[in-house]
Length: 143
Image 1 (cartoon, rainbow, N blue to C red):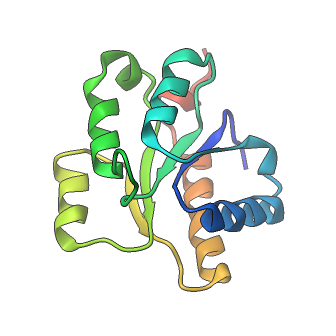
Image 2: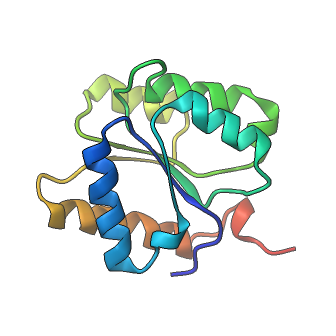
């Protein structure tokens, strides 16, 4: 896989951090992984870091600021919007209204439910990484 920049996981569940870390070790991409427990820490990182993340995987249900509000905050900030970071929801559950809002109002680039097993979650995660590794978008084009 051609991964440039960090793979960001925004999730308050540390068990999920461990699962994603294990998956990334299996895929050989662990060196790119960065975890954030909440959206405010992510926004601070995005505004101050010179790195452009490969993509953001975000849970929906989190304290302080949920995934929907975080996506809206990033989209409404001109500096962060220009970073053109693929934003994907990767959550334990979702309502039909959340999925509809994510695509129609928040223009996310994907919405996935974590698998019921480690293997299902690994397959979905690998598919996401492979897709964005192959996809042409503003951050994938070298000047």
